[in-house]
Image 1 (cartoon, rainbow over the protein chains, first blue to last red):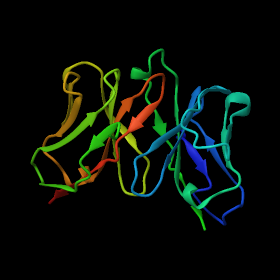
Image 2: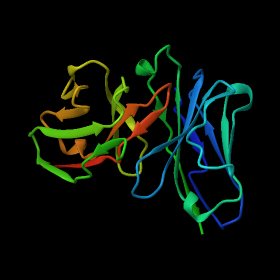
Image 3: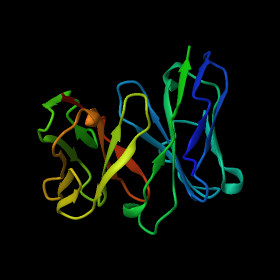
Image 4: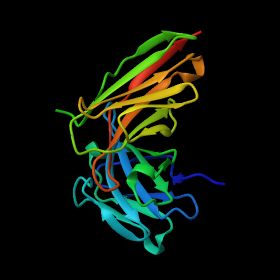
Amino acid sequence: EAGVTQFPSHSVIEKGQTVTLRCDPISGHDNLYWYRRVMGKEIKFLLHFVKESKQDESGMPNNRFLAERTGGTYSTLKVQPAELEDSGVYFCASSQGAASPSTDTQYFGPGTRLTVL
Amino acid sequence: QKEVEQNSGPLSVPEGAIASLNCTYSDRVSQSFFWYRQYSGKSPELIMSIYSNGDKEDGRFTAQLNKASQYVSLLIRDSQPSDSATYLCAVNAGGFKTIFGAGTRLFVKA
């Protein structure tokens, strides 16, 4: 079974440009999460989808970030316009979706390393 | 105060020893606690989860939870060089939101 995949693996853009990151969850996983890790800091939660619905987007840093999951399959995270502080590794994770978050195992993708110059 | 705190390390132990990793959290409401292992340049991988006070054992790994002290630990017995990685403590922060610590780097010397 394929794991969580993310594209691209690396992206280098200039400040002010737009970048779109893609995440393909494990087939059949209803829950999809986006996280970000900036250098030297902890992994931070950005948002959580259940199928195509945003359940919790409390971690989105500002309105330059837009996440979508049309059709409840893959998800995209767009940063527009990108700023220097957006550099970091963006992880996507998916889970089947359990009744309780306690038993909902998240599987992480390899991440996209974003560098904003 | 950080929501989940870990000693950044590095923690260095000889092969065959017990590695002890510690974590404290600030939200008393948290009910679920997780330990992830992350090899350099790789994605985090869940290795243990714990919800009740006490110990939970899985192979060479034991997670310990003390909700009164807001403390979670991970013990790795018979440490192997392949255990060298960063270990991330994570806490459920309500709903399905997970808060991570910055991680502790572990080196197991052969």
